[in-house]
Length: 319
Ligand code: 13P
Ligand code: SF4
Image (cartoon, rainbow, N blue to C red):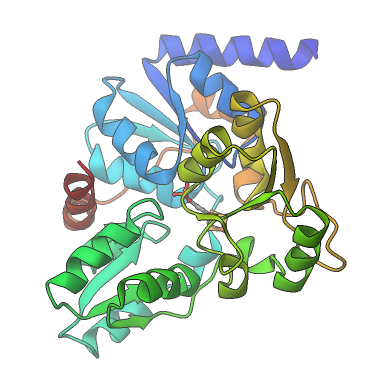
């Protein structure tokens, strides 16, 4: 619409004026993703988002995603201004892993190497030895297991169990989960697969084990997008947030994408899986943030310094 086009133009101007770059996650609104790319920013998974912020020269990073993504950018780029369209955009994994309880858990197992998922607060990261994203969890845990290290993992129990099974690592798991991926139903998926026997099944590893067990490809958002582009299949069943369809359809317009079922009878569902916090990112709020400077992320310098160590370890390992 005309109104949307005007809003986009306003945002482009503001980004330019403020030497700001927009970094968006694949789960955000398609307009935001496209705008990020049109303006020289990027749309990415959480590992690439972290890396992009450190490599881009802009003085202001605008992070469209959820809170931990903005915090990670700030921790890695303390001298830059980091803005988010909505500071209330959190994540169920982060919410259900408060630092006091997590620190207790770590204190009770001092002989374990603490590995935390990026979907956590700066405080939880600061208490860890390693931060990982879904894109790098498997090789990091394999590396640690080969050195004979025992691992305390948090907060996503499904991702934890998945890497534990593939690596044989000795792992203690924090009992967290993602409210979006937790909803995928194994029986309904089996029925949908029976209706589409040629479809490849793509699953994000935050999904329950009985859903992951049915996957042809398990991986980060970037890995799942790559799978749509590279596998010969015509049809795909996708078990992750529906925001990912935007990029998949751009890159592979001739493929048929079916959302994995979150309920019932095995019918595919285009928009059942939507992260309520990712949805809080809108063009309207983005424009407002740039105009008012509200939505700035602050992380205390000493906390940022401590949290930076395990994040940097991940980035160095990923090189
Ligand atoms: P990715 O790192 O795979 O993009 O995942 C981030 C996330 O929050 C998934 O729910
Ligand atoms: Fe967190 Fe799940 Fe939303 Fe990702 S999809 S941000 S893991 S609640």
